Amino acid sequence: MLFIITIVICTLSVASSEDYLPRISLKEKDNKIVFCKEGEQVFVPRGFNHIVLEHGSSGWHALFNTNVYNPYEIEKTLKEMSRCGANVVRVWAWGVQNEFGVFGRDENNAINSDYINNFIDFLRKANKYKIYVIPILDEFPKYGYFGDLAKELHSKFPENDITQATGYNRQFFWESYIRAKAEGIKRFVNEITKVDINLLNVILGWSLQNEVFVKVTEGPFADFDSTIKLRNGGELSNKTPEDRQKIYDTAILYWANELTKAIKEEDPSALVTVGMWTSDSAGRIPCSGLPHDGKDPRIPPRPSVLGGETSLIDFIDIHIYPWDGTSKVNPACHEHRLVKKPVIVGEYGVFPPVPIERAKEMMIEMLSQAYQLGYIGDLHWAWDLRNIPGQTYSAVSDGLCEYLMNWKGWRPYFQGVK
Image (cartoon, rainbow, N blue to C red):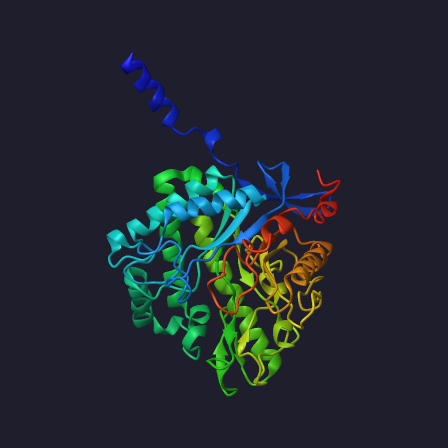
């Protein structure tokens, strides 16, 4: 009898294909590109960003860092998200880079084994609660094996790097940084595949960056007297706004396409996305020419570049906030009619001191406009930021989670899509 019981228990513990969420794809249905489960059933991503910082109320993102990850708390969080009706969560897959972070020091442990185990545990829990994941592969390798690889490639092949780019901007212009990140991405995806390839089903889309931007205070945009060699072999001076914009557009498209290729090399069925805010955050037009105008030095990419026909990215992720103090969504700054890829709202929220009831109304007004523009999903910023000063209203406060997930105003935009 004991032998029979043991066999039954072992049989039940072996996961079958039915235990996993179905893979999500993009498909055109009735002239609208939508997410689909198993290629047929329309799927509308709705959910939240989930943030855990290194020091609780301060520091950088560290959800999966080995000195931070809490499997019991994440179980509670995903369970509560599911109860509210969420079906997607967006998280930093790469956070603080140190001995507790994603990258190990040597080739045999290039991806920190304890870190990837935390991430895999998270995917299993998300799968349990039927929540898809958008993991953010943020920034570039600065530590460990892949950080060393970036330095080595730059040392060996400096001619491949656009060395007029400095500081933060190097990650988009230096081939050495792009190659190191691409190799890190491939190894990260491969580590999941080696443990359980079916867990890749849980990934709605890999995000190449939380929010893409370059700084006009750093090269090649800090001065206006350089000639920049482009990836297509041509050269442009950075003297005019038009040419500075072309330099940015060309570089950011190359960066995105190379990293997208890396992901699809490991998982050809994967979807890839990237996050961005829009130029109206600083009162600029999308094609601003990277001016030195005394405003925010960070310049987001044009949505029409990363969401254009020559982009290999599958969908883009635009962030919507009350940039002008209102809930107005600016179609011109979203380059609405120029974007050829599907779009989701990857972040949206409202900040105090706007009263919570008005903030709720503003969030729905934002979403209504986004779905009217044809966007196909939304993720609130963020689940729980109550301990972090200066942040938006948290979903766990004031009934906001239920309020947002109970809103059904998105449904008319998918009626008749079969």
